[in-house]
Image 1 (cartoon, protein in one colour):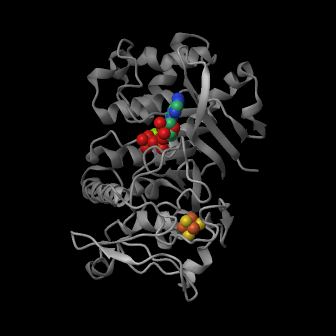
Image 2: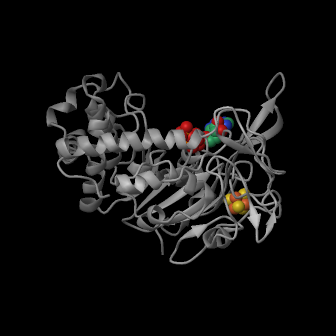
Length: 406
Ligand SMILES: Nc1ncnc2c1ncn2[C@@H]1O[C@H](COP(=O)(O)OP(=O)(O)OP(=O)(O)O)[C@@H](O)[C@H]1O
Ligand code: SF4
Ligand SMILES: [Mg+2]
């Protein structure tokens, strides 16, 4: 049995209106039907654009957000159904490390006070002296000196503060740690050190991680399995190497196509898939496949009307697309890197490509919104991510004790 199983998890935030905000006029479908499993001792990496629901999903696992529907089974117990008092006991076993290390530490508390607070609440250590000894031990594990105990968060660097955040989770002896963008607020030179630390701790303490990141490189380094999220749902999930070797969902293909390849010959042949427009609003998600308003392979049949389920396409590589096989076989073609042409057999369902002023081509389709904003939101992000990853790789070799696995 898997340690953590999410079954069709939904988190819908009500949108209230009126003088006293008591009328629900709609919902933000932040997480809308996510199922995934995480094995004990493994790392599940969750990636996706800003606003696609990653943090909401992580918080839902800890019940920091109300779960609208579905199940979160941890070690055989469905947390979604637990009364809040019983949930408290499980909170110790499921911890979260936050993106902003400074913002998540109380500036008025010293490190001993910050770290012992949760321990006392969960009855760990019979007195403060015993808790102090344990904290010293954990501080050593995360690479901080024991004199850190009496110091305050502002006295530490960003990387050290993230180590404090990790230590705060570790003192509670958790089974699962949800790391929400654990290194994105850190300087590139210390990102690899923190990633390496997480890996070392996982090995020595047998931890299970859910690592949330928008940085493809960070997730690749640390994850056994990666899930790609788009507008509240998973669109692809696969073992890390398989996902990077051969992404199958059009959205993942677009993300990956923007990542530069170190081999100059391959890099010269690399084709970019530029997506038009921004992520649609989760308060008004498109019907059918959520990605159909931006998909270069969009088809007239099904895409705009039927939501594709996440299905195993072989070797545990799951994809949520009606046309995975056809796209792989090339019978549904995407012929222009910056445009859209979707073909089923000999029938062309997408309209003609039109020239735009910058010399790029755009296309109009019956189901694709005409792009008004500049294209390539995702690849631009991925480009930045890739650049960051390259810099990090360089820094990592110089500064980290060991390189993260690639
Ligand atoms: N408490 C809330 N009430 C209403 N809407 C919310 C709430 N929390 C998050 N949302 C909305 O849910 C959507 C998903 O947000 P979330 O923070 O989970 O995204 P994310 O993938 O973590 O993004 P980022 O990469 O920027 O952190 C967003 O549209 C966000 O505005
Ligand atoms: S279902 Fe259609 S719109 Fe969605 S990813 Fe597949 S081809 Fe694109
Ligand atoms: Mg987030």
